[in-house]
View (cartoon, rainbow, N blue to C red):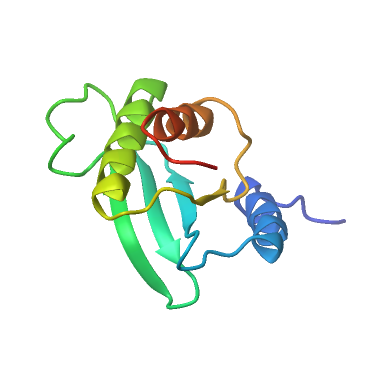
Length: 122
């Protein structure tokens, strides 16, 4: 009898399939998103250097006390707006969006839309 694959392993397969095709460069870094049950995390990564340029989450000091929950679309919107502000300060205008195997829906879409509204191009 075969074992049924877990949700995490299926997401990891999708994540690897997406990551084969995209990579962050110095001119156009990668915007990576991670969604947990209680929080949402986003970071802008330069894959050529192997360095994280900007990192924002619902646990950031700027957002921690202001959000009633870290796991809803409103929190994802706040993270996207803050990420776009920090990217503008760092001189980053274009990114490649890495949804990390998550469906482009709900919190992931809210974060992406807020980042686009903040001025990031992807």
